[in-house]
Image (cartoon, rainbow, N blue to C red; front, top):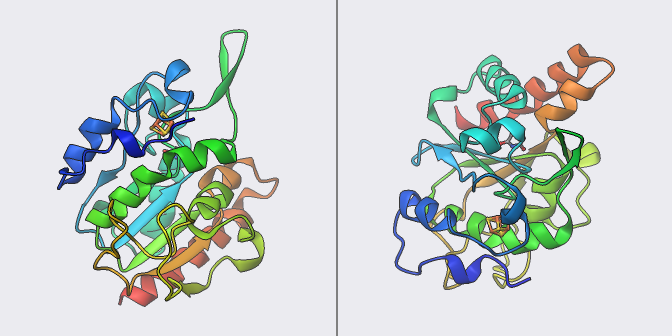
Length: 226
Ligand code: URA
Ligand code: SF4
């Protein structure tokens, strides 16, 4: 697969320009069956940026991230943690919905590493244009995109992590926010916090406990902003 890089206009200064270009992305096969590209949205000067997995069924139909049940739960948790849900930026590691058809139902499929890798240039491009103080990594897929394959959310959640100081090649996992030219973006002081995905709360046997854990992790981010 060619990946998303060739679809990113080097002159795109803004998130809106990136979003417009991403509408035509064919960097992996996921564009074929999904309805549309679901790009990041929200406050571009947000102090907190959230990275999810991929759009769900509802997001695919509406063209906006986190507008379904997981998004509703996330916004509530963000609010309960003391972060203003009106001043966040939300995006996903993979910008097209991956699913399997079962009859008429579209069943979510976790993106593979090839999709994460193909789509990562969009995430890198977003980070080069955002200025977060905290990046919240939601679940294993986002962690793979941002922290590499060995990171374990369940073991390493809820702590503030630095962007490792060593600048990495853009083809590597993102260690620091870099722009299209591989230049380190001007948010090297951003810190990162990994937690569970809101969908994992919805799937949990004990939803109350899982939700409290999510809010507790997000409270660590909220305190770091204060
Ligand atoms: N889950 C995600 O990871 N992202 C969305 O946009 C919606 C659900
Ligand atoms: Fe492009 Fe990402 Fe969609 Fe693949 S998932 S077609 S790389 S936007």
